[in-house]
Image (cartoon, rainbow, N blue to C red; front, side, top):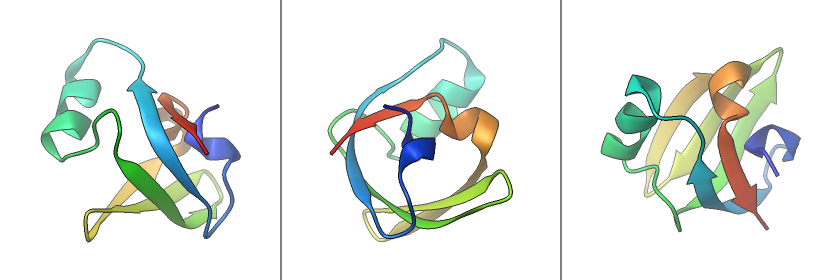
Length: 71
C-alpha cells in the first residue's frame, strides 16, 4: 500500500519506491530504502513528514504515493 494510506503515528516498512528517476535515487541517498521502518509524523493537505533513523523528511503526496509500505 502507498504510505499515503497511513495516518499520523502509524508505521510501515518500505517495500519499494516506485519509478526509476532522480526522485527515487534521491530518496535512497537519504536512507529511505527497502526494509526501513518509517513513521508518519504529519499528514495533511497533500504534505507529509516521515520519520526514520532519527531523520525527518518532508514530501508531497505525489512523491509519497510512490513509496510502497507494509505494516
